[in-house]
Image (cartoon, rainbow, N blue to C red; front, side, top):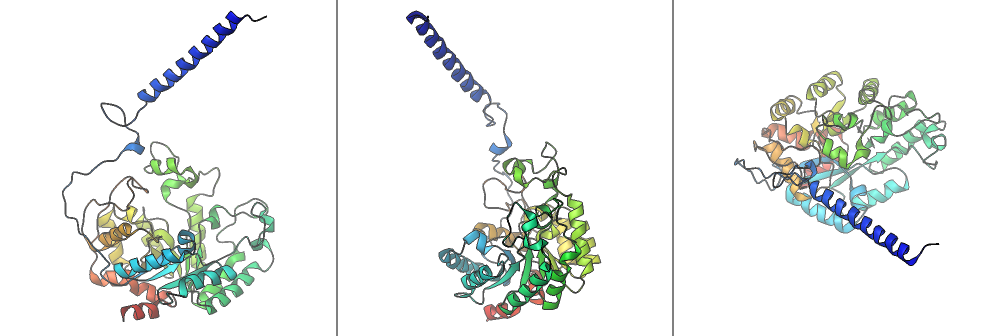
Length: 400
């Protein structure tokens, strides 16, 4: 039977142990303070270097020529908030952005809702791209129930696109889940170049609308998250952006499948989103552009990659000026827009590519490539006017 003394001793012992644990934890916390101060180590997430470099900084308040932003997401970023739309149109006016292409139009009733959101008050400032509804009414966790695995899906989608174009849709956008996430009923990955989808790409060519396709992702996302990965900090914060080879198709296989589709449908214009997701390897992108005359590229969310290779990027932009479109992946805050103008129009050195305190897509700064006016006109609006239905008339209206 436990006496009062024993109970007291046990209680005191327990309290002592708790205090020891707390003291130890506090000591470890102090010892592990990775703030880089007073000789301590520094965690990369705490690194906030303030450059001492003194170089020219060009304050550009707007683009030199009217801009067509071919890569924006007004549904996902604004969620049909009319107040946010009004504010951004004011920003478009201020920065000389004539037209934005919203890439999340979807299909059916949801498409009509998006067209109404953008077109009711600002009919001359936006065009909309539709999206393939692969899942339909199926169960997300049961691919066999998905619409795309039912007979006649591609032909039905082609008819939907024809109706959508009649309602004013200007293109089709494919998201990266097509190839990276969607599966067949047997559990295998849905392939980008599966012949089942050919009627969709063929219909786009017949309808005269481009297909903007996001295939794979940056090279770093397909490599191990270790000390050799130059985007380790980003992937540490977002491990869901990593695509290890034991769980996902390889980046090379995805890009090869995309290219086979482009080659198989020469009458359809394809736009490789994010510099065809190979902005780290412009030699390879150049080879694709040389091989596939129906391929264009846009650089949304990639000035961080392009701006750290300014000599190579400038040569690429000069050579392929008639195949490059302007895109941001926005709508973004105003400061980020100014970085796009600086990257394209100036020779500024070592400036940020994002308004965020810590670089979100690679721990570096960028340099401007100082493009001449002729090339800027092509990239800012002329190329988009040539290949995206509805854009030319809206830009002309804006310029008037």
